[in-house]
Image (cartoon, rainbow over all chains, first blue to last red; front, side, top):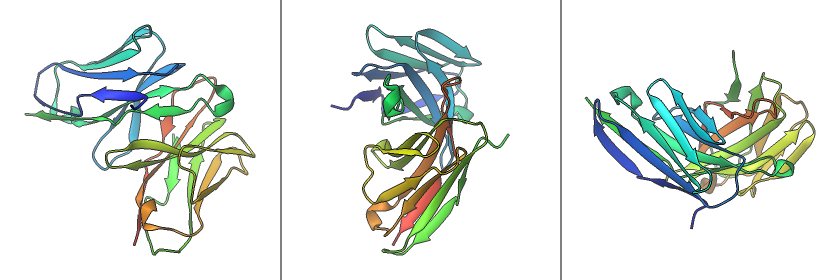
Amino acid sequence: KNEVEQSPQNLTAQEGEFITINCSYSVGISALHWLQQHPGGGIVSLFMLSSGKKKHGRLIATINIQEKHSSLHITASHPRDSAVYICAVRSPFKAAGNKLTFGGGTRVLVKP
Amino acid sequence: NAGVTQTPKFRVLKTGQSMTLLCAQDMNHEYMYWYRQDPGMGLRLIHYSVGEGTTAKGEVPDGYNVSRLKKQNFLLGLESAAPSQTSVYFCASRSDRFPEAFFGQGTRLTVV
């Protein structure tokens, strides 16, 4: 079993719909990251969370440390939100570089 | 605001050839990482560095070497390229003070 599991793997939505991507992890972490990757593009950090909830524009990220679960929500989705969204957890072990372990990504397609 | 810059962006190698990928960051970050991204496997850590002059192995280090002679640069070397090293390579950096991860734009490497 992977240490970081994302669901769903693929998601298609109509423009304007509310989107939720889930991330569950099985290891201790110091923080959780949500990343965005457009086709053929680089990787951009959207959020870094260690507790609670963060909001940036139409994006909301939440984390429940006790349940080892995080969600990324996209409100009023738009075709430009089409991308792969990646969850990554940061190791609490500084001597090992506080390494990131990545989920497999969720491919989101928003149709106009 | 260059951030993290990877050179080159694309490269085709013949089996057995060698090459070096350069990652440069201008944010004075202590930590630097090299990942590879393969379809269906997510991002996997190759090598990392917690500071100038130090490097360590990640999950998939075989066939790669790294060096961090200057704090701002992290080099990834392939001594004898193999088709299994065909992948997209990403460099990332972060600091303790601002632990958000910054990624380069990626290097698409094909070994034929």
